[in-house]
Length: 122
Image (cartoon, rainbow, N blue to C red; front, top):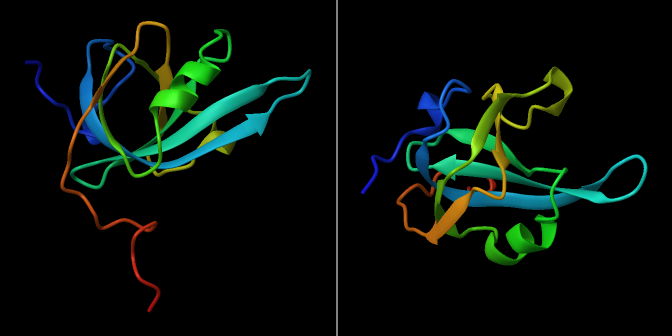
């Protein structure tokens, strides 16, 4: 089995990463000229967060919408990592995961539970 990397270790200089993450948030954005972009905010066991996007130049929106759900853990391989434009940063991390036709997903499990979506309001 491949080594599971932390989100904080990801860089655009490789494309053979394997990560185990929970989907914190999933949403769709309308784009100019029509169509939608599917976006995610992912968190790993160590609290590292990173945005992810389904490659808008593919017809994979429905596929990833069907298999990735909020509060579910996934083991993900075969994705690209790119630097995020400053206006599109949804986490402290300056990179974005690009989910493509080469991306492979498996159900996973994790232990991280202490994030803003699950914390009680004080």
